[in-house]
Image (cartoon, rainbow, N blue to C red; front, side, top):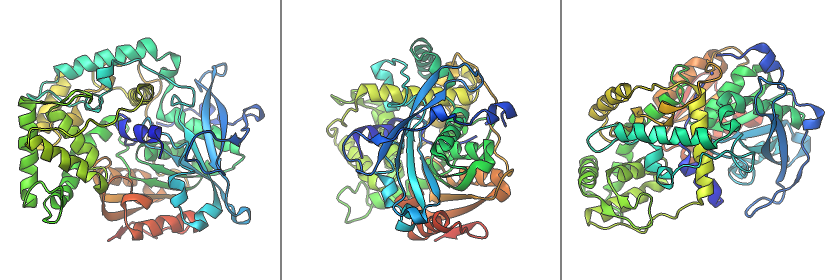
Length: 496
């Protein structure tokens, strides 16, 4: 995995998914690539790339509603089917985020796919609009505002949201001043339209896809806007498609996601043979974490080289949130808790290139804020944060707080897409039971919205990203079988 891939995965503002009301027929019908917008494949540049991976650039309209709109670049990659005689079509790898890229995924996670799937498809990746090396966007944010504990809207120690509202205004103003015209055209619906341009440029009548996290929302919107252009659609780690809230629902989902997942961390962090053990009993881990976060609220520890340069309660909470994405990350949180108990800090985490952070933050903010209008009243966030802090102390009100969208200067250009059961029954949802970022409760909402179009496989496992990552063998077999043969379970099923 490249440094840029790791960065994109870690700093995308929300890193989850959801939906937009159907657009007009002329707008949808206009998404057919012309011969001049085809793909010229060349060798990819960079390290760690499969020598069979090819790269190309797709030109798409910045504004699909304007026939004369300037064109922007979308960077695309592919690894052709390993058995042309068995080839079915193209499998698009849709990244999470917003702010994630799948450009290197054909060489990366795509190679984990079983051989019959590698034979059946060309694996295709892309960098969504606004994300380098596609035509990039940048807000020119203050360095301090690039801290993950700032991009996630953690309230002040006393629950005040004044600082969050000020940060939202500052970041929104920077995006308006520095983001150019492109930032106004970042949206999930436009990403779906870009995908259909890509489908046409690939010469495919229909497109299969594997979307993860926010990519499940992109995949759902694509399947809603272009239902008869879809072949086999896998949506992995799914979010609530509530068209009235969109990203607000994704952010709010962290409340339940942490509650679902933290007990698994507590059990691990209390095992007698664990060198990173923090407590002798699982029941003691939660109160220990809460006491430690409160102490760091009052008495932060200096942390030279980090951003911010102190270990405060919200930095600990953000580390908790990041660490619960996968059991493989549990040691990061445990080591930080153990150090903080002793009044010390570990070495500061390596800082990604600021240009990457700026680009990812801008794509995240633009997409989230353009998809749906957020409340602008501080009173709304004060009320929601107070309720959240009381009910979900581990997340301290963050999931219902104000992001840059609270001060976004541009109204949404179209209504959110409403996901429905209209279209072919060719969608398979796979969902871990304990997922900090996209909890099962939200996935069930997407399953309900799709109706007869979908079947859901619930996996008895912990972590974000189920298929070929944090799921289990039963879930992996079920998804692989569907991609290779089209065979789905006859009804929703549970993989114990």
